[in-house]
Image (tube, rainbow, N blue to C red; front, side, top):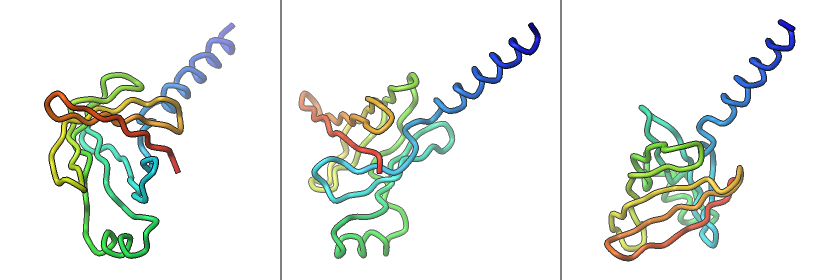
Length: 125
């Protein structure tokens, strides 16, 4: 009985450890050349632009130290993150951001400004 209980506790703790910070990793927005790295720092999550499939843009990105376009996301649950900001590179505007983990390889980033919102699908690479 003790060995069964020990196995159950080990499995439970392993699954709990695997489910933490599942949004961390390398992502690409659908239809875009950009490559982002999502990481956790001091309990908040950030999205750093780390590269591009376009060689000219990739060179410019790599010459800059750190381009944080997604900032200060807070974990609400295993699959929902809120209360962050996203800097739109095209329009250079600051937008409210929330993120939902749809499955292990897909996140939905929702950005909004006032009454207008847009959902952007990101795929893990």
